[in-house]
Amino acid sequence: MLQYAVYSVITPEGCAAILWKDQSKVKEAAEALKLTAADLYGLGIIDRVIDEPAGGAHRNPQAMAEELRRVLYEELDYLQHFDAATLVDKRLKKYKKIGYFLEETP
Image (cartoon, rainbow, N blue to C red; front, side):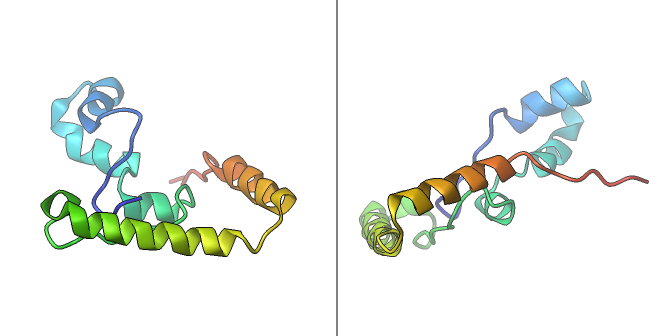
């Protein structure tokens, strides 16, 4: 996932409206959604955060394309060391972990 990208199934505004019925809670909703690349990496949902050029990918698409190409080749080279059954097993284990969390109790 690119460094400055975000991913979520709902906007922070929509989340705040549903959970709190209060648009002033957008910041809290955004934090709770864990939608940044760093958040998703920490949760094990994505495999890697790809650095973007200064100012973001949209400022220098050529440099971003070159970096993405480099990273893709690096990842493919790494994956070639595993047989298909191992790759499937690793992927299944990863997907089974997604959504698992522990609630903190007061």
